[in-house]
Length: 76
Image (cartoon, rainbow, N blue to C red; front, side, top):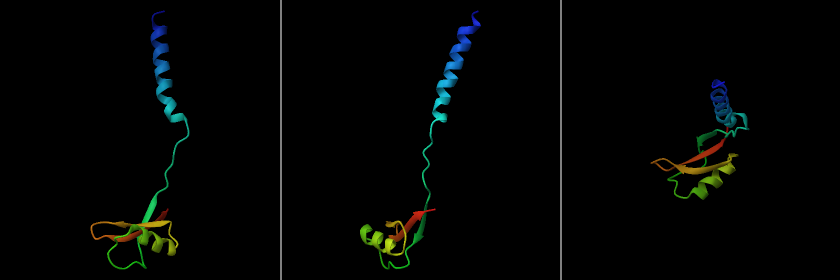
């Protein structure tokens, strides 16, 4: 009879810990990054880079790296 409360507690803890894995999972889309073909020079304004990338049919763009290149991105 002393085994029942211990087993019940262990079962309850296992159910409680596994409850996080049962619910819906959030899936984030992967972003692929490409160097802009129409932006030339040093990227200072992220807004200008973003507009150029959208003109190239990408989702958007941003200045990236030490060399400040305009990099366009889209979901893969």
